[in-house]
Amino acid sequence: MSETILSEIDNGIGIITLNRPERHNAFDDVLIQELSAALADMNGNPAVRVVVLSSTGKSFCAGADLNWMKRAAGYGPEESRRDAAGLAGLLRTLNEMRKPTIARVQGPAYGGGVGLVAACDIAIAAFDAQFALTEVKLGIIPAVISPYVITAIGERKARRYMLTAERFSAAEAYRIGLVHEIVPGQEELDEAVGEIVDALLDNSPAAIGACKDLIKAVAGRPVTDEVVADTAARIVRARASDDGREGMAAFLEKRKPRWVAKP
Ligand code: COA
Image 1: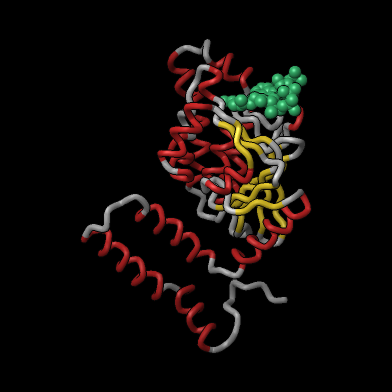
Image 2: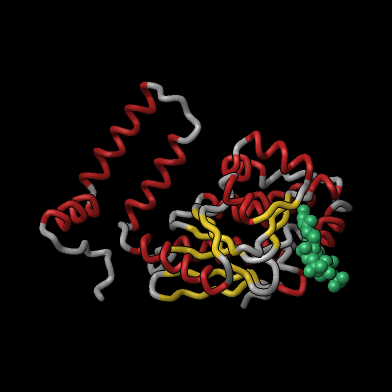
């Protein structure tokens, strides 16, 4: 039984909810461990086809729990390294999920909260969402989240927001590519997340997994002979796969592929 996370599976949708509202869902060692375990469970569960990361309370996530960070500053080198590796591992687990992930963002998302948003495949925010990379204000750095944040918003924008620690709005988060969509309120947030979930559930789970691998293999690399050959090899495998055969046959036979739920 988790103390800090709610986890449920409903019709192929895995919903993980950060549930530490009295601390604005700031993450300490317990939440990191419980969230990592919930993500690993969903990743390995064939009943889960999409994962939604949401939260209770006023804030999406106030980043690292500063009481925990302060405590960890006094750890010995080995314990300190292990502790930081836990947080880095959580972000990597989220980033490398085989299932598509959606961040449902309301209220503030600060520090590591921005990291969670950036490490999801898709992010949707309500107008009241606010973002900030506050670490340098606290005398620390956005270290373990940086690969995901820089990938999401680009180096130039990362330079501004990581160095100034300014707060920015949902509209700015949309402009710089941190979130894909912004909506007026919580009701519209659920509707928008529902639409994305429906789109994902129409698609082959195996192809989605292979597509995530493809993006990871190609993103940021120059178009070398090796990359071109690798992309050709991937389509060879995909079109001969069970889902490739089924999906193309279903289109040509004017029927729904087997992974689409019957109405
Ligand atoms: N770590 C630990 N405790 C936190 C926290 C964090 N990251 N963020 C908020 N809290 C705690 C506050 O200390 C406060 O505790 P208290 O009730 O014992 O005084 C409680 O949560 C409520 O926070 P408060 O600031 O009073 O609420 P608010 O609604 O005015 O503001 C935030 C909410 C999230 C905007 C604000 O708390 C904040 O800016 N937090 C810091 C976020 C941050 O910089 N995170 C990056 C860490 S690397």
